[in-house]
Image (cartoon, rainbow, N blue to C red; front, side, top):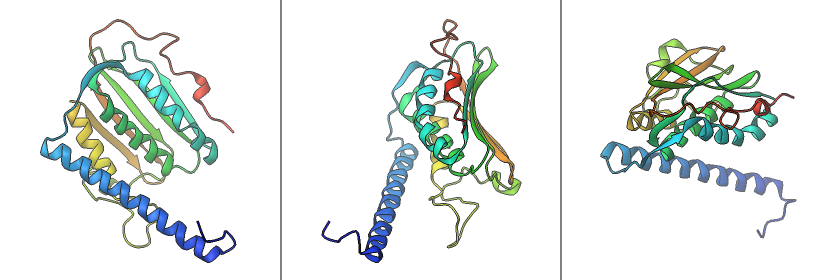
Length: 217
């Protein structure tokens, strides 16, 4: 606070320290979360909720970032029943990470959140992007802790390699499954498949993600 904004060199140093501190904080949080899952200390709170409504709200939070990057943020749903029984906190963390990664690694084109029926008992959420993608050889390691395709001191993207490892654990916690398809420089698709909770047909104007979520510049 005592350093004036005119001292640009010192301001750069302070911003670097602040950024490094935030990265360290995120890394510690992820290590603690991963440890809690692996040790069985995390106690999930399973409840029945509408997955479409949850994702509609979450996707909307990325709208400002999509506008800033000039990306189309597309959300669509074709499912007939979007009720699931799951731990809402970890489900939210799964898609915060997957949508966040898609936004991070996509510089032009779109990020799409597609919710559809696999069959009468399962529902799939696909996060598709037109980003940098991954090499085929790396896909097998993508969910390993501290694994990063872009490694070394000259990495182009920040990260600690824990996000997708934590996603995998959260998916397993919710008795779901996750698949990934990717091609270098062509984009990626992450698919999370949940078991449906038996319920009435919820597809209506109130649960369909509106076209207004599309962000076109």
